[in-house]
Image (tube, rainbow, N blue to C red; front, side):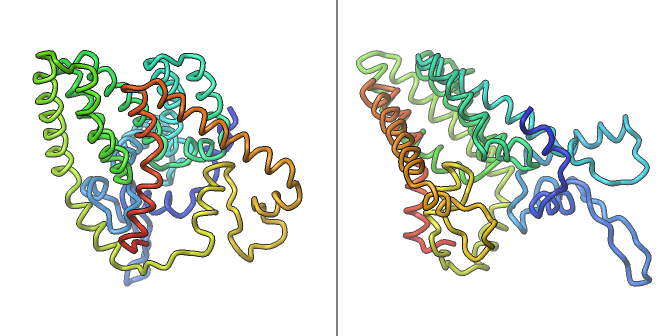
Length: 334
């Protein structure tokens, strides 16, 4: 309900690039001055990655959704309807709330699952991702789904459950390659989880090969789908220097916390920034920060104290962000 008015807003840069290069096409004036439409081909939908903002699974679903809408609505002009274009992201964002609650219920925390779904629904970044024609809402839905399938396979690892876990990993990494850190950690901890659950039983030597084969099959499928795009990504990253903007980490953490940057720069006195609010209301700022850090720490240690698979889940949820930042700084990446 909160996000519904945003579905009809004008498209912004990354959305426009996706429409023009991967999903639909663009109007262009030729040498004679005539305006014609340059249509995006299906190969562009799957493999245009010169500017790596094409979240391919989202683009595929959005293209099919747009085609179905045009078949029914019969619009006079070949313009993209913003609400239709954003609909797959909106539905994925709504699904992510349910999938988060289901995941926490699956590991024994039904009430925290309900609370987490409400907190996520009200978060500024969630509001943006569910009303923006990008793949981030799908990513947020696939992460708790991947964890749920992982827990299910650990406890009763049929071939079907392990293959479902492998397929979900492929879709997640296909949607957004930045989830590599999350998936690497999850798979690194899988042998530990299997040892904890099945040590001393014949099931251990049954489950380890199933996990390995499901992961191998998924990796082969992902390479077939995404290797051409990864070559374009490597070239794109090489075009930029690695200068880190001032206050980069402070801005990222502030944005992820409340949806505002800390202090972006000279953007005018009326531009909302968290540092200005912190100076204007220091007590409220410190109280909010303290409550957030306390809740984050308490939740993490609750998972650690629970031990076993829950402790590993706590590490998988916490470590990808600092790991990705550390690797980027060590490699001098942009």
